[in-house]
Length: 218
Image 1 (cartoon, rainbow, N blue to C red):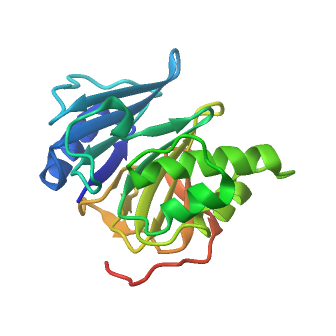
Image 2 (cartoon, rainbow, N blue to C red; image 1 turned 90 degrees about the horizontal axis):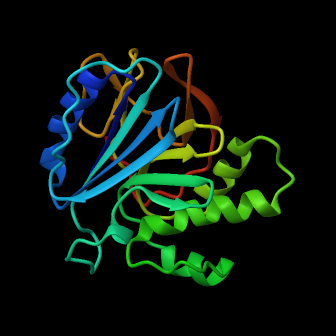
Image 3 (cartoon, rainbow, N blue to C red; image 1 turned 45 degrees about the vertical axis):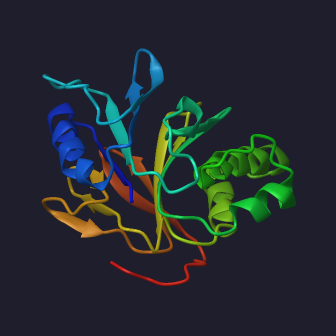
């Protein structure tokens, strides 16, 4: 069990971190869009000790709280979300059932015991092989390869764009531009099989994808 969450407001983000912490205190990962420093990634064992005591205009905060879902039971930097491959970073709640098959099928090079690690690698591979100008089409292609359950926060490190998608796992957004695994104020469940992009301080649907979920729960 894990949780993902995000907000453009530092105070709300801190509350979302506390709200989602019940879903996992094995490790915490943060991915922050700072307009001056770009995308900042922070990882640590246990519950986050980072506290934001003021608002930071123009920044988007995302976070992941992790409960171990693989054979990995001791904290390591490389097995903690977000997982990064060159230009892409991903946070994931759920369990993929075909990640080993994808590693073999596409010759992925960074073998990791955590299933999530295949996702940014696949996006990077498909981007390099595709003639697609719009990365949303590549993200759609990758999502349709994934079997199992997931709610994802995907970041294009180069363009600083953020995307959300859900298949089977929990995910909520609200009108303030927040998202969370745990239900939130003014929140609604993200429709399964849709890709959302953060734009103009809110989450906007930009594409649909064919789901491979073995079951659906809200």
